[in-house]
Length: 622
Image (cartoon, rainbow, N blue to C red):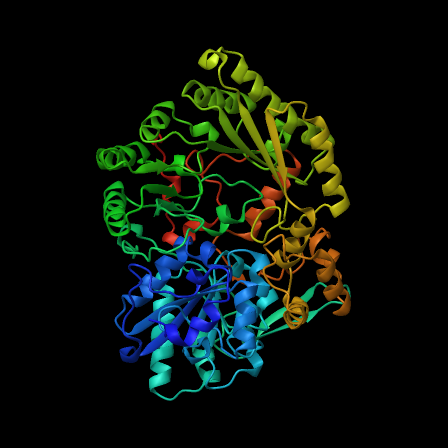
């Protein structure tokens, strides 16, 4: 546990000291003094968000159960704590031991969203670890990073020693074993990184060189040494029933974003929405059995005291054993008054019976994601739902006692027209009219439909990775157009800041030349860009200008389908040829069926011995 006397003067002057004290119930780690290797797993955002991340819980637990690793945690401090650390000359520390991060063998970051990149550098700076990997010496930690944003690691290539590509439960243990052995045998940093590069699923940026054409596009991307792979293939876990799951997790002292048990039901996705990076990079589709999931839930509730279980996945209604799982969970959750939530129901798999079962503890609002307001644009993005299915699903929800719905859409999608924007308002109005088409609750309660609209960001490893993002002016014009089309207070309208989305697009599609901008941003104290009160579009424009970087080159330029993309050296299993086919089909407004209906030949089967479980036909008995 941390030395409270040492940190008490700092904690007395910050808004939420509970973020920095550790010692939570169930926060148990192996003795650092007896461990062969010490790891600090960092979440580059504040405690309340990081403590809600299931991936961090899985990976820290997987490392701690090895017997030779002691893995601790750290989160981005709020500015008041940053000030106290700096003014008192105290380096950023791990929550379990209170030891500074620069004393660890490995400091690991999970990259969940692009706007956290400045937080990574801020944490390294507070920890007194050299920001540039080229400036680190033998006594500095090895900095690793993984997570969804690691599928385009290039913007952080100057700062991260090793990127973990894909799923980390087995991969990080293998990496740690190699680093431990190198440490025991006195092998230096440079040779250790060279050996890491030869492991499957790990990318060491310093061992690759990049050249550029006169027009700024990439001319070549090549290894500097022999035995360094030309491409990095992602790691996956084939058998989810036997992979580590944390049934005992730290229970925070303060309220966090998700105070509940989270059950990961499956990995991957069957659907193939053309804007969705997660649906591509997490393939192939793999399920966990209801028996194991129920056992996970029973122990997790008993060990935490939480009164809610959330079933997490990209589209929970695609799980083939959903009814069986719900029945198993309800056999004991009803008696214990534990609520079940299904956060990602697909409209075309909306089960009235299932909804009624899950509502037996507590009725809650429902969230659907039509994504586009017209059938034409839903076909372009391959959403594969019709307006009739949307209305039918909403009507069932209303008949089941719901009077509140949230609908997610995007604006700025490829081929989008003003008619598609107006279609969002029309669809929402149609849902409101559907509610009032029957005399529900004796007319006592009204309906509220929340329309939440984000800005399209072209992401790597999607069929839309080549598409340009709309200009800020165009995105904002479309936002105001939709606002003018909503005619009733029964519809609440929320939309994202287009300026934030533009910076996200720059780093999503960026290359390693953006490292100069990140370094300058760190020098100027920029961090917590995911928070409205700290994000400054004007400061980012100044940084880009001072570094000679044109953000439009990355965000607002249509990439050529034959140019080398910054992330082309990563192999996710899904082929580039498949992405090109899907891009062409999008322009032709042609849909592709889901994987369970018909195999589309995406290439993901190559990751599971040529047989992709999502190809196995059969009715969804979910």
